[in-house]
Amino acid sequence: MPTRREIRLRIRPERGLPAPEHFALVQTALPVPAPGEVLVRNRWFAVSAAVRTVIGGGLKGAPFPSVEPGDPLFGAAVGEVVSAPHGSGLRPGDLVSHRHGWRGYAAVPAAGLTPLGDSLPDPVAHLSQGWTAYAALTRGAEVRAGDTVLVTGGAGAVGTMTRQIARLLGAGRVIGSTGSPAKAERLVTELGYDAAVVRGAPAPFPAQLAEAAPEGVDVLLDTVGGEQLSAAVAAARPGARAVLVGALSGRLDPDDVARVRVVRELLALGLTIEDVRACVDRLPLLDMDAIRSRRVPEGVCVRASPVVSRRLAALDAEIARLTRRRDELAARAAPPPHPEIPATPTR
Ligand SMILES: NC(=O)c1ccc[n+]([C@@H]2O[C@H](COP(=O)([O-])OP(=O)(O)OC[C@H]3O[C@@H](n4cnc5c(N)ncnc54)[C@H](OP(=O)(O)O)[C@@H]3O)[C@@H](O)[C@H]2O)c1
Image (cartoon, rainbow, N blue to C red; front, side, top):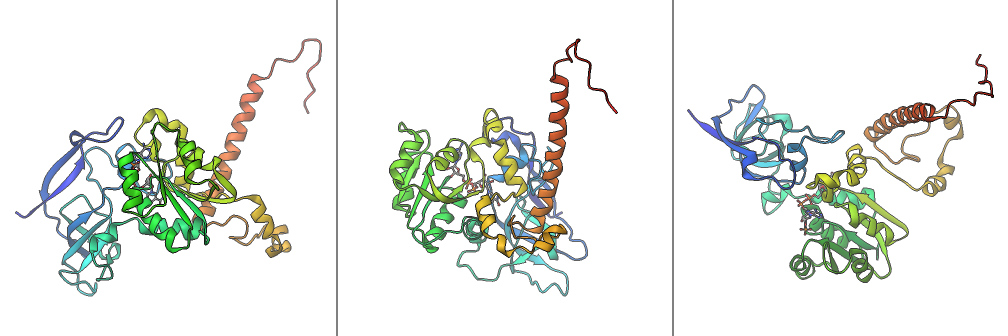
Protein backbone atom coordinates (compact mmCIF):
# COMPACT_ATOMS: atom_id res chain seq x y z
CA MET A 1 0.00 0.00 0.00
CA PRO A 2 1.47 3.41 -0.93
CA THR A 3 2.29 5.47 2.15
CA ARG A 4 3.37 8.97 3.10
CA ARG A 5 5.30 10.37 6.01
CA GLU A 6 3.93 13.16 8.17
CA ILE A 7 5.11 14.95 11.28
CA ARG A 8 2.73 15.12 14.21
CA LEU A 9 2.86 16.89 17.55
CA ARG A 10 3.53 14.28 20.26
CA ILE A 11 3.60 16.49 23.38
CA ARG A 12 3.49 20.23 23.85
CA PRO A 13 6.82 21.91 24.70
CA GLU A 14 6.60 23.61 28.10
CA ARG A 15 9.20 26.32 27.54
CA GLY A 16 11.99 27.23 25.13
CA LEU A 17 12.64 25.69 21.76
CA PRO A 18 10.90 22.43 20.88
CA ALA A 19 13.07 19.31 20.62
CA PRO A 20 12.72 16.02 18.68
CA GLU A 21 10.86 14.35 21.57
CA HIS A 22 7.96 16.76 21.04
CA PHE A 23 7.31 15.37 17.55
CA ALA A 24 6.54 11.99 15.96
CA LEU A 25 7.37 10.97 12.38
CA VAL A 26 4.46 8.78 11.33
CA GLN A 27 3.96 6.59 8.25
CA THR A 28 0.33 6.71 7.06
CA ALA A 29 -1.65 5.59 4.00
CA LEU A 30 -1.31 7.85 0.97
CA PRO A 31 -4.41 10.09 0.94
CA VAL A 32 -7.01 9.31 -1.70
CA PRO A 33 -8.21 12.62 -3.13
CA ALA A 34 -11.96 13.24 -2.74
CA PRO A 35 -13.91 14.73 -5.68
CA GLY A 36 -12.52 18.21 -6.39
CA GLU A 37 -9.23 17.52 -4.58
CA VAL A 38 -5.71 17.58 -5.98
CA LEU A 39 -3.01 15.14 -4.85
CA VAL A 40 0.24 17.04 -4.27
CA ARG A 41 3.73 15.72 -3.57
CA ASN A 42 5.31 18.28 -1.28
CA ARG A 43 8.81 19.43 -2.22
CA TRP A 44 9.42 22.11 0.43
CA PHE A 45 7.64 23.44 3.50
CA ALA A 46 8.30 26.42 5.76
CA VAL A 47 9.26 26.03 9.43
CA SER A 48 7.95 29.40 10.54
CA ALA A 49 8.09 31.18 13.89
CA ALA A 50 4.31 30.82 14.20
CA VAL A 51 4.75 27.05 14.64
CA ARG A 52 6.00 27.64 18.19
CA THR A 53 2.70 29.38 18.96
CA VAL A 54 0.45 26.73 17.41
CA ILE A 55 2.19 23.80 19.13
CA GLY A 56 2.27 25.72 22.41
CA GLY A 57 -1.54 25.95 22.57
CA GLY A 58 -2.22 28.80 20.16
CA LEU A 59 -3.09 32.41 20.83
CA LYS A 60 -6.58 33.82 21.26
CA GLY A 61 -7.52 35.84 18.18
CA ALA A 62 -4.65 34.51 16.03
CA PRO A 63 -5.56 33.77 12.41
CA PHE A 64 -4.49 30.11 12.73
CA PRO A 65 -5.76 27.28 14.95
CA SER A 66 -3.63 25.53 17.56
CA VAL A 67 -2.36 21.98 16.97
CA GLU A 68 -3.40 19.34 19.51
CA PRO A 69 -1.10 16.45 20.52
CA GLY A 70 -1.60 13.69 17.93
CA ASP A 71 -2.46 16.15 15.12
CA PRO A 72 -0.24 16.65 12.06
CA LEU A 73 1.46 20.04 11.86
CA PHE A 74 0.49 22.43 9.09
CA GLY A 75 2.03 25.40 7.32
CA ALA A 76 3.01 26.84 3.96
CA ALA A 77 4.35 24.33 1.43
CA VAL A 78 5.32 24.13 -2.23
CA GLY A 79 4.68 20.88 -4.11
CA GLU A 80 4.11 19.20 -7.46
CA VAL A 81 0.69 18.12 -8.68
CA VAL A 82 0.44 14.30 -8.90
CA SER A 83 -3.19 14.14 -10.03
CA ALA A 84 -5.87 16.79 -10.48
CA PRO A 85 -9.61 16.70 -11.21
CA HIS A 86 -10.74 17.36 -14.76
CA GLY A 87 -11.46 21.04 -15.31
CA SER A 88 -9.16 22.26 -12.50
CA GLY A 89 -6.67 23.64 -15.02
CA LEU A 90 -3.85 21.77 -13.23
CA ARG A 91 -1.66 19.06 -14.74
CA PRO A 92 0.76 16.57 -13.17
CA GLY A 93 4.10 18.27 -12.52
CA ASP A 94 2.63 21.78 -12.04
CA LEU A 95 4.05 23.60 -9.01
CA VAL A 96 1.52 24.82 -6.46
CA SER A 97 1.58 26.34 -2.97
CA HIS A 98 -0.84 25.50 -0.15
CA ARG A 99 -1.07 25.24 3.66
CA HIS A 100 -0.61 21.46 4.17
CA GLY A 101 3.12 21.24 4.85
CA TRP A 102 4.91 18.87 7.25
CA ARG A 103 3.86 15.78 5.22
CA GLY A 104 5.13 14.06 2.07
CA TYR A 105 1.83 14.11 0.18
CA ALA A 106 -1.36 16.11 0.68
CA ALA A 107 -4.87 15.93 -0.81
CA VAL A 108 -5.98 19.56 -1.12
CA PRO A 109 -9.21 21.08 -2.50
CA ALA A 110 -8.36 22.69 -5.86
CA ALA A 111 -9.64 26.02 -4.55
CA GLY A 112 -7.07 25.90 -1.71
CA LEU A 113 -4.09 25.80 -4.09
CA THR A 114 -2.16 28.59 -5.76
CA PRO A 115 -0.54 27.66 -9.08
CA LEU A 116 3.00 29.08 -9.12
CA GLY A 117 4.16 29.00 -12.72
CA ASP A 118 7.80 29.95 -13.14
CA SER A 119 7.67 33.58 -12.03
CA LEU A 120 10.54 33.09 -9.56
CA PRO A 121 13.88 31.46 -10.43
CA ASP A 122 13.72 29.19 -7.37
CA PRO A 123 10.25 27.88 -6.39
CA VAL A 124 11.20 27.71 -2.72
CA ALA A 125 11.28 31.53 -2.73
CA HIS A 126 7.46 31.39 -2.68
CA LEU A 127 7.82 30.40 0.99
CA SER A 128 9.68 33.61 1.88
CA GLN A 129 8.13 36.33 4.04
CA GLY A 130 8.55 39.05 1.42
CA TRP A 131 4.82 39.77 1.34
CA THR A 132 4.79 40.49 5.09
CA ALA A 133 7.69 42.94 4.81
CA TYR A 134 6.20 44.59 1.71
CA ALA A 135 2.76 44.99 3.28
CA ALA A 136 4.25 46.37 6.50
CA LEU A 137 6.43 48.92 4.71
CA THR A 138 3.88 50.08 2.14
CA ARG A 139 0.50 49.71 3.92
CA GLY A 140 1.68 50.09 7.52
CA ALA A 141 4.67 52.33 8.09
CA GLU A 142 4.90 53.78 4.57
CA VAL A 143 8.62 54.27 4.14
CA ARG A 144 9.62 57.63 2.63
CA ALA A 145 12.77 58.63 0.81
CA GLY A 146 15.68 59.12 3.19
CA ASP A 147 13.99 57.47 6.21
CA THR A 148 16.06 55.70 8.86
CA VAL A 149 14.46 52.28 9.28
CA LEU A 150 15.01 49.93 12.23
CA VAL A 151 14.18 46.25 11.76
CA THR A 152 14.21 44.14 14.91
CA GLY A 153 14.90 40.45 14.26
CA GLY A 154 16.85 41.69 11.24
CA ALA A 155 18.34 38.24 10.46
CA GLY A 156 14.95 36.48 10.31
CA ALA A 157 12.70 35.65 7.38
CA VAL A 158 10.73 38.89 7.69
CA GLY A 159 13.77 40.97 8.70
CA THR A 160 16.00 40.04 5.77
CA MET A 161 13.25 40.85 3.26
CA THR A 162 12.52 44.11 5.08
CA ARG A 163 16.08 45.28 4.53
CA GLN A 164 15.85 44.69 0.76
CA ILE A 165 12.39 46.21 0.33
CA ALA A 166 13.02 49.25 2.56
CA ARG A 167 16.03 50.15 0.46
CA LEU A 168 14.06 49.71 -2.78
CA LEU A 169 11.40 52.04 -1.33
CA GLY A 170 14.03 54.74 -0.80
CA ALA A 171 15.06 54.34 2.85
CA GLY A 172 18.25 56.24 3.59
CA ARG A 173 19.60 54.00 6.35
CA VAL A 174 18.48 50.54 7.46
CA ILE A 175 19.52 49.13 10.83
CA GLY A 176 18.90 45.55 11.93
CA SER A 177 19.03 43.89 15.33
CA THR A 178 20.35 40.39 15.88
CA GLY A 179 21.54 37.92 18.53
CA SER A 180 25.33 37.72 18.17
CA PRO A 181 28.31 39.80 16.96
CA ALA A 182 29.00 37.19 14.24
CA LYS A 183 25.47 37.58 12.86
CA ALA A 184 25.76 41.38 13.16
CA GLU A 185 28.83 41.22 10.95
CA ARG A 186 26.92 39.18 8.34
CA LEU A 187 23.95 41.56 8.46
CA VAL A 188 26.25 44.37 7.34
CA THR A 189 28.62 42.59 4.96
CA GLU A 190 26.25 40.08 3.32
CA LEU A 191 22.77 41.57 3.65
CA GLY A 192 23.69 45.23 3.23
CA TYR A 193 22.40 46.66 6.51
CA ASP A 194 24.01 50.01 7.28
CA ALA A 195 24.48 49.02 10.93
CA ALA A 196 23.55 46.22 13.29
CA VAL A 197 22.71 46.20 17.01
CA VAL A 198 23.12 43.11 19.19
CA ARG A 199 20.77 41.97 21.97
CA GLY A 200 22.52 40.76 25.09
CA ALA A 201 25.79 42.46 24.10
CA PRO A 202 27.93 44.10 26.80
CA ALA A 203 26.80 47.56 25.61
CA PRO A 204 23.14 48.24 26.49
CA PHE A 205 20.78 47.96 23.51
CA PRO A 206 19.57 51.63 23.73
CA ALA A 207 23.18 52.88 23.69
CA GLN A 208 24.01 50.77 20.62
CA LEU A 209 20.88 52.05 18.90
CA ALA A 210 21.76 55.67 19.66
CA GLU A 211 25.13 55.12 18.00
CA ALA A 212 23.64 53.32 14.98
CA ALA A 213 20.89 55.94 14.49
CA PRO A 214 22.23 59.22 15.91
CA GLU A 215 19.40 61.20 14.29
CA GLY A 216 16.74 58.80 15.57
CA VAL A 217 14.43 56.32 13.87
CA ASP A 218 11.70 57.22 11.34
CA VAL A 219 10.30 53.75 10.72
CA LEU A 220 10.23 50.73 13.01
CA LEU A 221 9.34 47.24 11.85
CA ASP A 222 9.27 45.26 15.07
CA THR A 223 9.27 41.46 15.20
CA VAL A 224 10.75 41.17 18.71
CA GLY A 225 8.93 43.37 21.26
CA GLY A 226 10.18 43.75 24.83
CA GLU A 227 13.39 45.68 25.43
CA GLN A 228 14.01 46.27 21.73
CA LEU A 229 10.57 47.80 21.18
CA SER A 230 11.05 50.07 24.22
CA ALA A 231 14.45 51.22 22.94
CA ALA A 232 13.05 51.86 19.46
CA VAL A 233 10.19 53.94 20.85
CA ALA A 234 12.69 55.97 22.87
CA ALA A 235 14.75 56.57 19.70
CA ALA A 236 11.71 57.49 17.54
CA ARG A 237 11.74 60.87 15.84
CA PRO A 238 8.58 63.02 15.85
CA GLY A 239 6.17 61.58 13.29
CA ALA A 240 7.88 58.18 13.32
CA ARG A 241 5.81 55.24 12.09
CA ALA A 242 5.85 51.75 13.58
CA VAL A 243 4.52 48.41 12.43
CA LEU A 244 4.27 45.61 14.99
CA VAL A 245 4.78 42.32 13.19
CA GLY A 246 5.79 39.87 15.92
CA ALA A 247 6.81 39.44 19.56
CA LEU A 248 9.67 36.93 19.37
CA SER A 249 11.18 37.92 22.70
CA GLY A 250 8.19 36.48 24.57
CA ARG A 251 7.65 33.41 22.44
CA LEU A 252 10.17 31.08 24.07
CA ASP A 253 10.15 32.32 27.63
CA PRO A 254 6.93 31.80 29.60
CA ASP A 255 8.21 34.18 32.29
CA ASP A 256 8.38 36.89 29.68
CA VAL A 257 5.02 36.22 28.10
CA ALA A 258 3.06 38.54 30.37
CA ARG A 259 5.34 41.43 29.44
CA VAL A 260 4.68 41.04 25.72
CA ARG A 261 1.15 39.65 25.95
CA VAL A 262 -0.47 42.98 25.14
CA VAL A 263 1.64 43.31 22.01
CA ARG A 264 0.86 39.74 20.96
CA GLU A 265 -2.86 40.27 21.50
CA LEU A 266 -2.80 43.52 19.54
CA LEU A 267 -1.01 41.65 16.74
CA ALA A 268 -3.57 38.87 16.77
CA LEU A 269 -6.36 41.44 16.51
CA GLY A 270 -4.65 43.11 13.55
CA LEU A 271 -5.29 46.39 15.35
CA THR A 272 -4.41 49.66 13.66
CA ILE A 273 -3.25 52.42 16.02
CA GLU A 274 -3.10 55.93 14.74
CA ASP A 275 -2.19 59.32 16.14
CA VAL A 276 -5.34 61.36 16.66
CA ARG A 277 -3.63 64.35 14.99
CA ALA A 278 -3.52 62.41 11.72
CA CYS A 279 -7.25 61.78 12.05
CA VAL A 280 -7.91 65.45 12.72
CA ASP A 281 -5.96 66.35 9.58
CA ARG A 282 -8.41 64.28 7.59
CA LEU A 283 -11.51 65.76 9.22
CA PRO A 284 -12.48 68.00 6.27
CA LEU A 285 -13.00 64.77 4.36
CA LEU A 286 -15.76 63.75 6.72
CA ASP A 287 -19.39 64.15 5.80
CA MET A 288 -20.87 65.78 8.93
CA ASP A 289 -24.39 64.52 8.14
CA ALA A 290 -22.98 61.02 8.00
CA ILE A 291 -21.35 61.54 11.39
CA ARG A 292 -24.60 62.79 12.92
CA SER A 293 -26.45 59.80 11.57
CA ARG A 294 -23.56 57.58 12.71
CA ARG A 295 -22.80 56.54 9.13
CA VAL A 296 -19.12 57.45 9.26
CA PRO A 297 -17.53 56.30 6.03
CA GLU A 298 -15.20 53.43 6.71
CA GLY A 299 -11.49 54.09 6.40
CA VAL A 300 -11.65 57.78 7.30
CA CYS A 301 -10.26 57.89 10.80
CA VAL A 302 -9.52 54.31 11.69
CA ARG A 303 -7.62 53.04 8.67
CA ALA A 304 -8.75 49.47 8.88
CA SER A 305 -10.12 46.73 6.71
CA PRO A 306 -13.72 45.58 7.30
CA VAL A 307 -12.25 42.64 9.23
CA VAL A 308 -10.32 44.96 11.53
CA SER A 309 -13.42 47.15 11.91
CA ARG A 310 -15.38 44.13 13.13
CA ARG A 311 -12.57 43.31 15.52
CA LEU A 312 -12.57 46.87 16.77
CA ALA A 313 -16.27 46.44 17.50
CA ALA A 314 -15.37 43.32 19.49
CA LEU A 315 -12.71 45.35 21.28
CA ASP A 316 -15.33 48.00 22.14
CA ALA A 317 -17.45 45.28 23.71
CA GLU A 318 -14.44 44.02 25.65
CA ILE A 319 -13.62 47.52 26.89
CA ALA A 320 -17.25 47.94 28.01
CA ARG A 321 -17.05 44.59 29.83
CA LEU A 322 -13.79 45.57 31.54
CA THR A 323 -15.24 48.95 32.50
CA ARG A 324 -18.25 47.25 34.13
CA ARG A 325 -15.92 44.87 35.94
CA ARG A 326 -13.76 47.77 37.14
CA ASP A 327 -16.86 49.55 38.45
CA GLU A 328 -18.00 46.39 40.24
CA LEU A 329 -14.59 45.98 41.87
CA ALA A 330 -14.48 49.66 42.81
CA ALA A 331 -17.93 49.37 44.39
CA ARG A 332 -16.78 46.35 46.41
CA ALA A 333 -13.59 48.13 47.52
CA ALA A 334 -15.46 51.31 48.56
CA PRO A 335 -15.44 51.89 52.37
CA PRO A 336 -18.79 51.27 54.10
CA PRO A 337 -20.88 54.44 54.56
CA HIS A 338 -20.13 56.41 57.76
CA PRO A 339 -22.65 55.31 60.42
CA GLU A 340 -23.62 58.91 61.19
CA ILE A 341 -24.21 59.83 57.56
CA PRO A 342 -27.40 58.32 56.22
CA ALA A 343 -26.91 56.47 52.94
CA THR A 344 -28.18 58.33 49.88
CA PRO A 345 -31.77 57.30 49.40
CA THR A 346 -32.33 55.30 46.25
CA ARG A 347 -35.28 55.77 43.98
N1 LIG B 1 1.68 39.35 11.50
C1 LIG B 1 2.07 38.67 10.41
O1 LIG B 1 1.44 38.69 9.36
C2 LIG B 1 3.36 37.91 10.48
C3 LIG B 1 3.86 37.26 9.36
C4 LIG B 1 5.07 36.61 9.46
C5 LIG B 1 5.74 36.60 10.67
N2 LIG B 1 5.21 37.19 11.74
C6 LIG B 1 5.88 37.20 13.04
O2 LIG B 1 7.10 37.94 12.92
C7 LIG B 1 8.08 37.38 13.76
C8 LIG B 1 9.32 37.04 12.93
O3 LIG B 1 9.00 36.03 11.99
P1 LIG B 1 10.15 35.42 11.07
O4 LIG B 1 9.47 34.49 10.13
O5 LIG B 1 11.03 36.49 10.54
O6 LIG B 1 10.98 34.57 12.13
P2 LIG B 1 12.37 33.80 11.94
O7 LIG B 1 12.78 33.70 10.52
O8 LIG B 1 12.22 32.54 12.72
O9 LIG B 1 13.42 34.77 12.59
C9 LIG B 1 13.39 35.01 13.88
C10 LIG B 1 14.61 35.86 14.28
O10 LIG B 1 14.36 36.30 15.60
C11 LIG B 1 15.54 36.34 16.33
N3 LIG B 1 15.22 35.88 17.69
C12 LIG B 1 15.07 34.62 18.11
N4 LIG B 1 14.80 34.59 19.43
C13 LIG B 1 14.78 35.87 19.85
C14 LIG B 1 14.60 36.49 21.11
N5 LIG B 1 14.35 35.79 22.21
N6 LIG B 1 14.64 37.83 21.17
C15 LIG B 1 14.88 38.54 20.07
N7 LIG B 1 15.10 38.01 18.84
C16 LIG B 1 15.04 36.67 18.74
C17 LIG B 1 16.52 35.42 15.60
O11 LIG B 1 17.56 36.20 15.18
P3 LIG B 1 18.84 36.54 16.02
O12 LIG B 1 19.36 35.29 16.65
O13 LIG B 1 19.73 37.08 14.98
O14 LIG B 1 18.39 37.56 17.00
C18 LIG B 1 15.85 35.03 14.29
O15 LIG B 1 16.60 35.37 13.16
C19 LIG B 1 7.43 36.18 14.41
O16 LIG B 1 6.91 36.57 15.69
C20 LIG B 1 6.30 35.82 13.49
O17 LIG B 1 5.25 35.13 14.12
C21 LIG B 1 4.05 37.86 11.68
